[in-house]
Amino acid sequence: MSDAVLMVSVSGLRGLIGRSLTPDVAAGFAAAYGSWLREETGQAAPHVVFGRDSRPSGAMVEQAAVAGLTSVGCRVTTLGIVTTPSAAIMIEALGADGGMVATASHNPIAWNGLKPLTRDGVAPPPEQSKKIIERFEQKRYDYVDVESLQPCHHDDTTHAVHVERVLEHVDAEAIRRKKIKVVLDSVHGAGGPATAMLMEALGVELVHLYGETTGLFPHTPEPTAENLVGLCDAVKQHGADIGMAQDPDADRLALVDENGVYIGEEYTLALCAMHLFERQPGPAAANLSTSRMIDDLAQRAGHAVYRTPVGEANVAKKMRETSCVVGGEGNGGIIWPAIGYVRDSLAGAALVLELIATTGKPVSELVATIPAYQIVKDKLPIKPGMAEAAAKAVVERFTGEKIDRQDGVRVDLADGWVHVRPSNTEPIMRIIAEAGDRARADELIDTVRRAIS
Image (cartoon, rainbow, N blue to C red; front, side, top):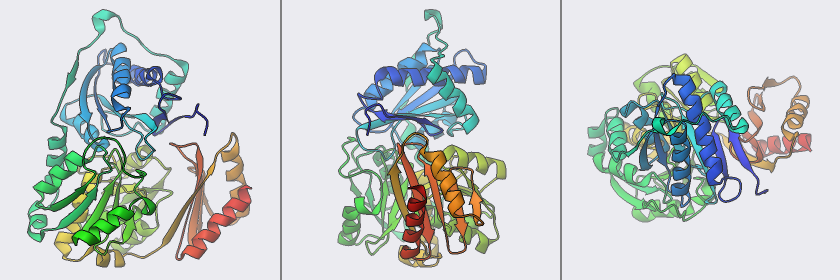
């Protein structure tokens, strides 16, 4: 991987600390966002909240970014180490005009990034992201003179505000009565304190793995099967009802059933959607790389599912446009509008706990009610021009099938689907396939690889 890799997209900015992401880069991106926010709001001193995950580079990135925001006239309130959805909630709680989070989500410890948020607590939609990126690339920063510099303040109420928001929308008493035991892996990320606070409020018996916010990840931080063997073992060891795993900024949630079997990230959205369709009928939205499980559940309940390009901003935008009751992405990102339009592991955890409590069924039994698929995720290093060439090759290979070109190429077949697209957050080409069995999903992956090569 080149030391010069700097990913700038609808998902914000990500880079390698000391290489592509330096203090001047962080300050510049923040200044571009702050300048855009002044233009967008028409305010001379827009209010921006700033949070960060627990990465060791977080303090450096925060200081540089806050300097960039302040330099263009923004008034900044720092939140400290908080989850990304918590920062989004604080925008509304503090009446701010926007927000920014220093995080690289599931990327390894060498990475960090900056994720901008709008007044509504969501990532800027593509047309707005483009304007921010253009300012950054062109270094169009609207610096202010000394008389217009604003003070910086700190707020330490974020965890409590987020937890209270979730508690307002779930049947906490039902969860308390059930006396559920949870093993939670917070991977030494930002989610530990707030999630522990939520679990205590819900009367959950909590076994907390890696709850301290050191940022020193005990294993590869992406909550996938190969990285959560320890969590699966802990669920069995402690006789827990469920295992939960967060990523470093706690906007993703993966699940392990009561038998210590990794269910995966795809089931987070499926289980939450199944529950919410019962509670509040309405449509759903999911990105093109998300399992067909949500389509099956929606069809069963008589609701529509809207598909979007990958990226939380794209899903949130479609949810707002179509008044969805639930949405998200197959990476464990549940978006529940009652809490906010950002992927939120605390909201996902509370919904799953409520589902267990109100149905009285163990996780494995709940999972068994959802049509089962096998999803396979593959990736290739990306080179200049590869994305367009790959898309063309895949379209030609699957001529006559249902093709969606919103984001790369998704091909829908009678017995499965395959999606090929460049990543927004890593210098790779993603290939994702789903079918009724692993052999067919692998076959779709191999077909795409051959077409691309």
